[in-house]
Structure formats: C-alpha cells, structure tokens
Image 1 (cartoon, rainbow, N blue to C red):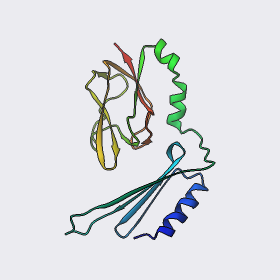
Image 2: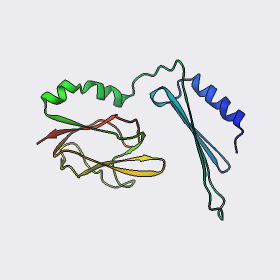
Image 3: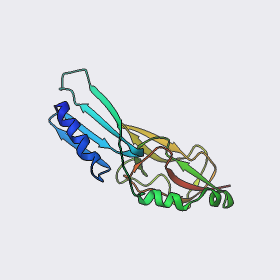
Image 4: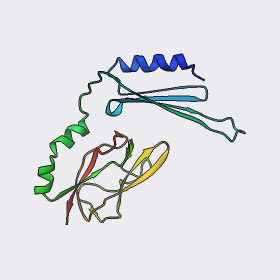
Length: 169
C-alpha cells in the first residue's frame, strides 16, 4: 500500500515532466496517473485477498497547472480532417464516447471489426473502447463505408476524439 505522501510526491513529479501516463504496481495496489485534457487523474485500485469480498477503489482528480502538450499523431490526423472537408465529402466522424483504450478487434490475434473499405450499418460494431476494465462496443451510427481509421490498436483515446471517418450512403 502506498502512503498518501508518496502519492502526492508522484503527482508533483509527473506534473513537472512531459510524461502523459504513468503506472506503478506494488504488492496488491496499482496506481495509474494520466494527464488528459489538462487534468491529472489518479486511480488507486487495491486487489482484494482471495477470500475477501470487498474491492477498494478511489479516484482523485486535480487540475494540472502549466501543462502544454504536443498533439499526438491521431490528434494531428483528426485536425487534418476538418469539419468542412467531412461535409463536402459526405463523411461522418465516429468519435470516442469516453476515455479509454482503443481495440480494433474483439480479442488479441482476431480479425479487426472493420478495415478501410468495409461496409457498415448503423448497428455495426467498429471497435471496442476499454474503460476501467469494461469493454464498450462502439457502433458505426451511420450506414456507409469506412473511409479512414484515425487511431491505432491499443492506443489511449480521449472523450470526443475522432476514431473513424465513414463515407455515408
């Protein structure tokens, strides 16, 4: 178990660096510190003993002062796909509904849900976004064809981040 003073020191150290994400595990405690949207999140998850029925979980959030981040490659791609261009080309953007990890396939080694050129309908599952160990299936929302995949498998995505461009029918 980590002491509160150790956790505070970790937050200060991470805040002063360009590190975007940090995880550490000690005994039955895992701490993950992330800096999305100029906010630093700390997740403490204690793994219960084999015969315990309780799980302890805390989330602490505090603003990060003076954080300046360069856009990631996916954000740069998303900025290239301007809203005016998407309307002119009849493209629909599928956005991430939450912060989490993007998975293009249902399991490691399995075929991807979709690829560029795949035909989709409104209910077609295009990917999974894992958040807090929950797998959330993301649907296409429109009928059409996948024009571009804007993120890579296993990449951390943020709320509202563009994931796919779909050429609407």
